[in-house]
Length: 511
Image 1 (cartoon, rainbow, N blue to C red):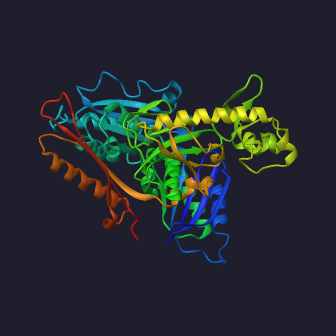
Image 2 (image 1 turned 45 degrees about the vertical axis):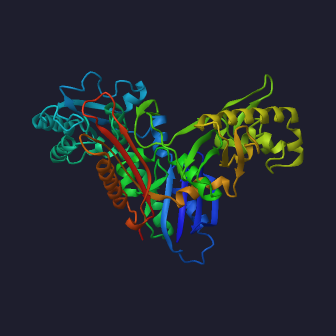
Image 3 (image 1 turned 120 degrees about the horizontal axis):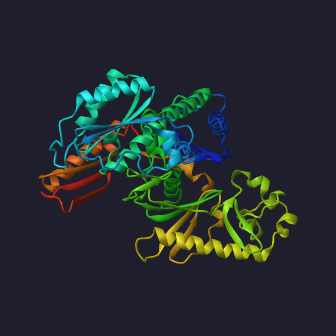
């Protein structure tokens, strides 16, 4: 089965053509501002060996940083009308109260607080105020706002209020795109509401980005379906990515971790993804990225949904090295590496120059290579070793030595030996591990629920059934589904001993 995997990063667009797990062709090229031409060029390269006919590619998988970059850079975002259902409770902290001022200014629309919502055990807080919701919908329609975020108290348990609010909004203002917080999952009102608002703010950009991907694919004559990679190391249909772009926020690091697993064969290891500006560290567990169990900061906003446990430091191939006094980073020449680095005739000493001087990378001519100070290069190499050892230690949960897999275009910078590491593995095709991870991704389903007065076995079985249904709806073949993890946690200090259960399943793409 042939697949194409593409990872569209801020600097490079990487692509691979795979037949099963065998890499037939790979390319690393600069990312273009218009998305379409860069993806089209990458596709043309990986399909270049064909004899004039379009190969039988069953699917195209794309990972992109467009959505998270939009939040971080405050660009391409839509104004969002915010509807919170929970009065007379849930009013002490207003929506977006702790957002950075510039992001709040870019996204904030009208805010409506309505009566309704439920307690954790299913009891209504108050009757849902349909008349107030209709007035809110009319105000949204008249404001010209094109996106809305609806959040109700404990809606992951009972989403009736959110669904009814969405139905009223669709009737009164049919052109408004809506995100329901219950579709994004986890318990925690403020963090869930934040994720819901960000998701709605990205709807317009998501539609434009997916349309650009589809155009690029169509121009090559490919007929396979389009999938986008998401935060847990799996894929979703492009239609779902248009609805839930926040689920693609961390697809870059997760693609690299999945690629590291597939290229090395190791299912449990620390992955160091060394790019041009940063090194992302993550932990593989059973071949998938370890998920964060606490709130995650996105562009200064607290969220809590499916996100990998990733730590990034300023260490990459373009990181600047200074001679007097000696220092490394945190600034980087980024995508201008081949213009600014000394080995390329530029005037900036970078960690890539250090790697070339120490014989870790073959690049440039001997005269330029020998002109790079050896003592400075050795000092920078020692700095790299210390920083990466600290980074690996942050990812470990025990004192046991673990293997490290080095991937990314700057993988040559990772020392062959690190303290606390059993072995450092540098795989073939490490520079396009992210595209390999995208191409080989599976489909997932996750359910996160709270049960009140239900036996543990029954609660787990019900949550597993919901997770399986999600995976099948996302495109997984039912007979390939496997349970990835099960977490059941009693909720302390709440009457009735409620139980929170989270189940995640994975499966291969159907067909």
